[in-house]
Image (cartoon, rainbow, N blue to C red; front, side, top):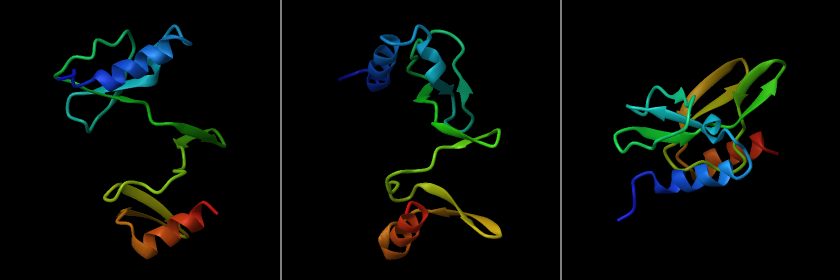
Length: 106
C-alpha cells in the first residue's frame, strides 16, 4: 500500500527538478477547508492534507481562479456569472450544464 500523499510527492519531485523552491507550488490544510501556502520544504505528514495551489490568472491586477477548460466532475461547486449576478451551483452534468459550460468557453 502506498503512502497517502505518494502522488503529490511525485509531483513535488518533478517540480524540484526545475525549481529550487518546489514548496511554493503547494498548500497544506488540517481540515481541507482553510488552506495555507507552504513556506518551506514539505514533509507530507499523513495527518495533514496537501494540494497543488489552484492555478490563477491576473485580470486588471486581481488574481482570480483560472477558468476551467474541461467540464468539472459531477458535484463540483462552481460559480457562474450571469449578469447582474454571480450564482453558486453544483455542476451535475446533463444538457443544461453542458450547454452552459460550452457557452462560457466558446
